[in-house]
Image 1 (spheres, helix red, strand yellow):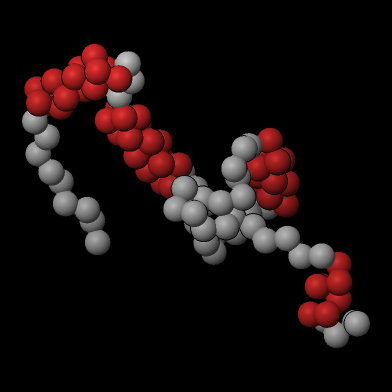
Image 2 (cartoon, rainbow, N blue to C red; image 1 turned 90 degrees about the horizontal axis):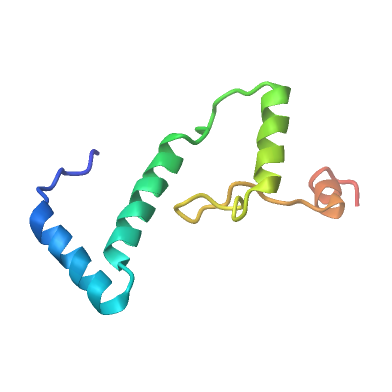
Length: 96
C-alpha cells in the first residue's frame, strides 16, 4: 500500500519554521522532516530479507555495522541481528 500524497502549503510551513527559529532558536519541524527523509532513504537502501549475498558482501556489511552507531536495529526499531552465546547454539543442536 502506497502512502497518500499530501499537498503542502510551503509558505505556511516556512512561516512556521521561522517562528520556531525565532522563538526557540531551533526548529523541530525541520528536524522531524529531515529525520523522516533520512529514515526513508535508509529503509529503501537496506538489504531485503531473502536476498542472497556473497561471503565478501556479508563480511563488509558486518564491518560497516560494527562501525555504525545504533546499527543493532533498523529505523523502525526492529533488530538487525541477534547474538547467540555458544551455550545457546549448543542447546539448539542438543549438545548440552
